[in-house]
Amino acid sequence: MFTIGFDLDLTLIDSRQRILTAAQRAFRDLGHAVDDAALLPHMGVPIDDVARALVPGIDADRFLRRYRRHYATDDTTPVPVLPGATELLAAIRAAGGAAVVVSAKQQAAAERAVAEAGLDLAAVVGGHFGERKGEALRRFGNVRAYLGDHVEDAAAARAAGCPFIGVTTGEFDAGALRRAGAARTVATLADVVPLLPEFTRVGGSELDFPFEV
Image 1 (tube, rainbow, N blue to C red):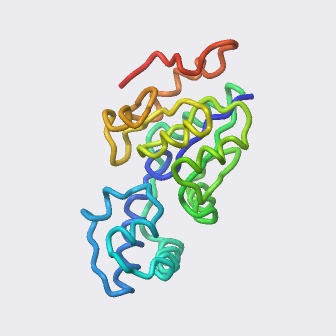
Image 2: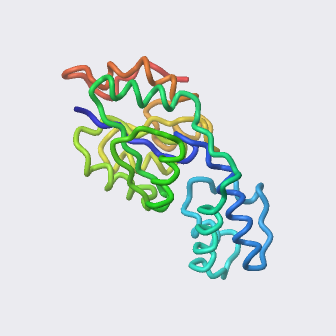
């Protein structure tokens, strides 16, 4: 049995618009106006840290409570599954592996997002960002790689002792992900499916992925 870890937002699902909508509503509740252009570069960062960065002196705890309420009660903004995600998760199971999510999203929100998307995962861990994701990944055995769209996901993989595979579905392009430490980059998760034998090859190195997009 091997394990492959995934980021959630903008790696498996595209929750970008729901995040933006909930954040803008929370900012307005507190008397601030923040537009998409200001928010987008911070996708993947804990939202209370984003609030502090964009509005110095804001009551981040109050903002966070309002953000979570708006996000949880938004039943109209779609959160599509990204291309190739379902196929890759099925291929991992068929190869005898387990797929787990470790996300910066709050635990309950991460679980809800996975359930709404219908993703079949062995485990969902929320509330971790950057290197702390790697600490969570170490709970699982034989972790072969961590796939994510954010440059901080490289720190997660290093902390877990596994390669980072950068997915260019978020705000960072292949060059930025490689500079952060990605062993390889892919344009979609579908690009990983034919490479699964590299994860399962007995005695093989999980660093020997024969691809680069």
